[in-house]
Length: 308
Length: 290
Picture: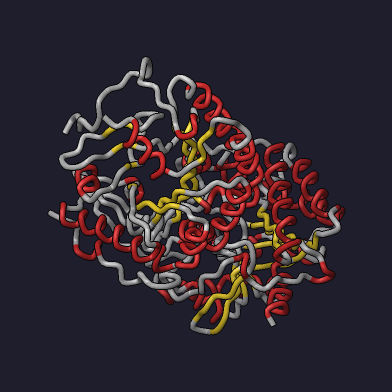
């Protein structure tokens, strides 16, 4: 039996991408981007604020950070909750000290559980973006469109009611999307999302409801990737982030503004023995005269301005 | 079959002395994999292209980073040390991103076939189907670059029992699919000639970064160590060293410095033939093939 004929047919073999969501473009041939104050390096700091249910369904997969042992997995449940109680306050204290602005990607169920945490984040001048309902309510190919629209609207409405802010940014739980997600996000008033890590600068996506900006949040240098998945040391983490910054900074002198994007989880980098490594690298970024610490919304505003 | 009898057993001692071009003791080449992964590929009965349901945008965008960003960064580093790439090419890249193909043509890089897409696997293909992808690869690369494909690395390293016989029949000179040696070796095929070209899974950035989870600095170190040993042994009989790369991995900012330093190290030695896979193959056929 040979393979089905479908397997040797290539209907999307054509110039450009094999979908219509965005155009291909070479990072090094774009018009140089300008950040405010002539800074060359935008520093985007994303802090996921996540709720991991004790009884995950894991459909169609368990999001990284989900429960691991047989039910009831109190060890991982409380380990994740540590992040939202202790680790995140270590972050807030550090950010205030060094003047860093964060973009906090919040599961709406965290906002419901801990409205005081949301107030504290806002009081310190940080940005709130939406991050789905919880880490077991995923967006994925095969999810019914109406169900997904409800998930998105529930999340945004809940966070807006609690934060009293208009939510414009989105990161999907586990960065997972269906074919419909960008269309549904823009229908819900979302202007930018951070799910596709395929670039070093923001770019424009097409949706049924107009443009959506994708901010590629680097996943290869997230704390989850370097510390949790790769088991590298804190020293190596700092080294890798410095190397990332220096290379992008070098490019910025030739190609225009660059973006250094990092993701730090309160339950990973917020541990007592890791927080000083985080402090070291964030201070190092902030001491550079080229750094513009910005929220995702500010980066999108500057990107849109630079486009015109 | 239990034993495919692909090649003879050659102990690594008392081998015929190989001396590479200009009396070099080591032939060094770099294999950038320039690949296209599809957003919505059909499922091969033996292997699902993506771990998550289509669209697996995390895996897809990770690969797409190479085509938007990584290749250009990798090219700049290789230009700096005058190293031409031998490209393991998903040939559909000639349709999707001819701009990237042109940047390689401009650099006189070499193209060999890595199948149509890296999300299409050969498992379960009958002979006519496998012939179709070989013919497609030869034709597509010829039309896009003027080059005749001389080498093969099966898409996603997926094969059939007939793969080597078929590619040899179509005049392919070398295969990167076998990992039995640090020197080229004749492969047993029904018609024509074929040699194995040392490629490497062990210092391949996919394996080092995604399987062994090495840090960038550690990866740079093991490239240097791999070189040191093969350089030393090359005095007795010439060796081949390849660094297989994927711009979606090595092309990230935090990994470029260590990679750059490794290239600076290798190119600082004498008696190193910095070349391409087809040039190594031609030299081997001319001087050492028996």
